[in-house]
Image (cartoon, rainbow, N blue to C red; front, side):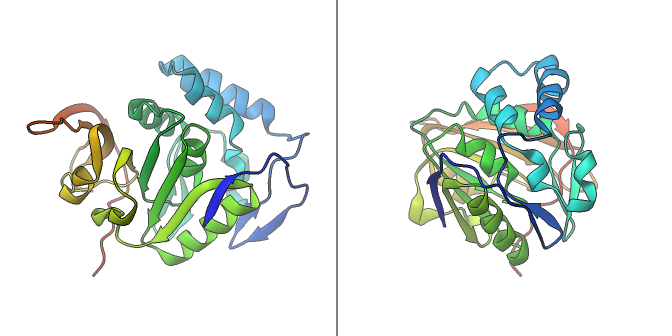
Length: 238
């Protein structure tokens, strides 16, 4: 469990489970790479929310990719992180985060922790982040990585994200970082009225579509279908 964010930065580096794990130092050599990423790959493609842009500029994405992919950390592409999973491309992270319309007082659920990058971005923007990962080694390494980086408003859990996190519900927003074959009813139930969920829907062998789901206080949710995307499938418990 990781809560709040430390104002200090760690000045050490170690390799754990193939990942480079350390907090960003004041002389982070990747600062210019992040600025180029935000300007050329994200802002230039239409992301306008300044808070989202600021979070992408601040979070050290190179700390969330395997050490042998370090030089690719700021390219606009997904990267493998092991166990058949990926870290999403920066633009998609920004796009889904902006669609969520995060506010400083929000509590947000993420389904699919992966390396922890999306959770770190969200943590810069909201009060609390709850993130679920079904693959135990990924969940454990992400938890350690986030702690080493000083993120303190993120709580992690190992489990089947299809069922959400009812003990911590309701949530102002839910973001799903793997493609589901449908919109999971438990996740919809755990949204607050007027809450928003961003989720890719579709099977691996078909076109997947990014959807924005808004929970209406009365009546069925509003579902907006956005652009085609490509995500790994949402894993389920046996």
